Length: 89
Image: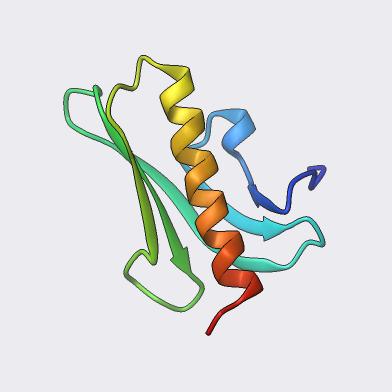
């Protein structure tokens, strides 16, 4: 996997529903997961830091049929992770 972005969700490009979160330099930060409701109409991206059980950041997708909304939620999640990683205080 080419690590193109400052924050990369491994497996997302292959339609995985979870995977590792890596920086462009290959630093492992934790895991991501995408969970949908039982009707598969909405979903939530979660980022969980390594060695914890609860998500640190989450971003909802109100309409799964909209690829744009999914992309925006993923972008917001990655931005939150990047801000946290660059200034963890």
